[in-house]
Length: 227
Picture (spheres, rainbow, N blue to C red):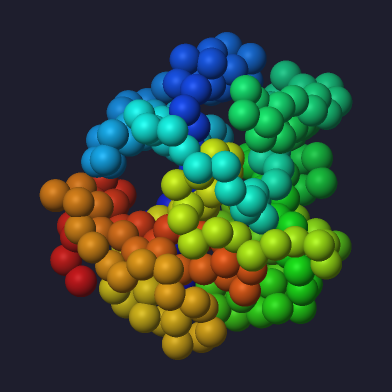
């Protein structure tokens, strides 16, 4: 893929706006960027995270209690960290603050539980064209993905608007082109390309376990939404 940004983003959904903001801003120390209105009573509170963005999607209406996605743990490197500090946010999402370079994480890492390691590697390295690393890792730009096989993993629900880590985002230059390419290489359709005003054209694809990945062409990064 032709990446417009070398860092993957991650999105979570919550009904606990104030508690989550206090945790991610004060406990973790992330810098607030801005609010995006997604419609349907959902506000996206974006936070800077070593080049990546943490998308805290606050829903006005109660979120359903669904099975978790495969995105199980977020790792954020910090030059102030001498050792690993394991935390959980108000909804129980796991996050580790790690020294720079810990397990190869220079910026962020994401642990993904998968039911079939070979199928997951085929998706991330084949369909998405990222690089396989050592010890069942995938190098997505400068984000490290840790694939952990778990035969008990359930399929991620079709409704991604549920509490917890629910999707990752890759920023590219041509949404339609990349979306079609991913499907041709074995990715699974999640949502056809669509446009939000003059800011973003995006789509969704899914891995073999149903985990959601947003394919995003953001005018702020690409300069245009033309295909």
